[in-house]
Amino acid sequence: MQKNWLTKDSDLKVAVNIIKKHLGDKDADTLGLFEIDVYDKDNLDIHLSEWVLELAEYFYKLYGKEQGDFVTQMVLSKCLTDGHTIH
Figure (cartoon, helix red, strand yellow):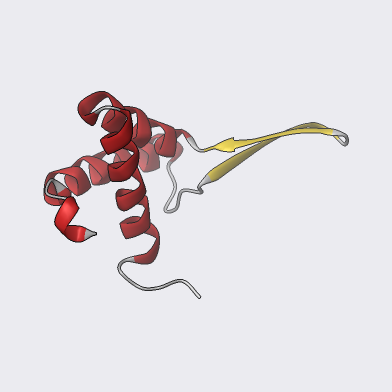
């Protein structure tokens, strides 16, 4: 699969910049994949975090839907697992 990801280094640099920007915006050390908005005890909204959406949008615009989805998945996998298998 890595052979199909020829733009890995530049894509990861973009991801690092986007993540750093969002860390700075939130003044935090970590970012979640999801955000939860609680309106009251019966109503809540769960959605992807802004940094994930920004990554996906960036790669979609740069590479188109199919390759953009692939690159987004590869970047997220690299960020989440750092090359290790999740059991």
